Amino acid sequence: MANQLPPPQIFDRGLLQRRLRSALARGAPDFLVARAADDLLDRLLTVKREFPRSLDLGAPVEHFSQAVLASGRAAPLRASRLGGNVIADEEALPFAPASFDLVVSGMALQWVNDLPGVFSQVRRVLAPDGLFVACLPGGASLVELRVALAQAEEEITGGASPRVSPFVDVRDMGALLQRAGFALPVADVDSFTLRYDSVLGLMRDLRAMGAANVLVKRAARPLRRDVLARTAQIYAEQFSDPDGRVRASFEIVWISGWAPHESQQKPAKPGSATVRLADAVKAARDRSGK
Picture 1: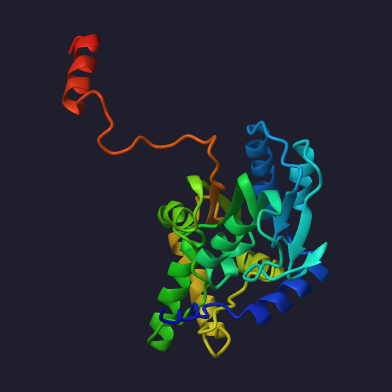
Picture 2: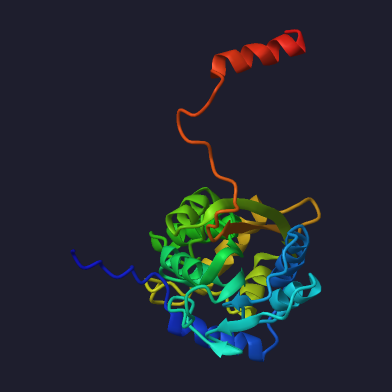
């Protein structure tokens, strides 16, 4: 068998770890993770299962662990590169197969270089009929900032540099879960808008959260003052409300999947239908009188 090539190194995870540590030490804004944790609690409350062994994967703060507790389950084991019960890299989980009944991850997997590989490892550590629930920023997040930065840099320097990290597309998530061996995969989106006095306030929040650009191929030079000023001008012109405040779009992609178990629903086998589609459509029209 040919050796598999290592995944491309998209993110500088060493730089990311240093920035997140610094952000946590300063008291990083946590409004995005707090919103996601509230959503996780709502999702867990709809699942009538105990999940005695759970893992909170990658979260730098305790919000998701607290959501699991608030749902009536036992406290999860917290594992991340930044602390918790276990210091662990999300891309190299140190747990035995079938160690957990529930794995949750909140706003932590957007910076892994091998997301399919992480999904496969999570699938490995889940016991049969175990549940994986995670969220991460989606591709529509910060679209205004991307547009304004690219336009400003193109105008002034003649070319745009990668300044904002790429995010996942919800349309890809279900397929990635299936590829990793999950049953009943589901992906959905929570979209919302925040408002700031100016784009500078948004950028300050992103830096304070440790969420500034950590791309391996990020621009070699800091953002020039004239480019930053033009970015703010473009942002205000194109993405402001009548009161002068500017909009920032965010998208949180939620994914879930189950470790396969014989008790789960199975899709019907191809060719097993007992009624032709045309006959079913005709019967439905007859019932509706159309």
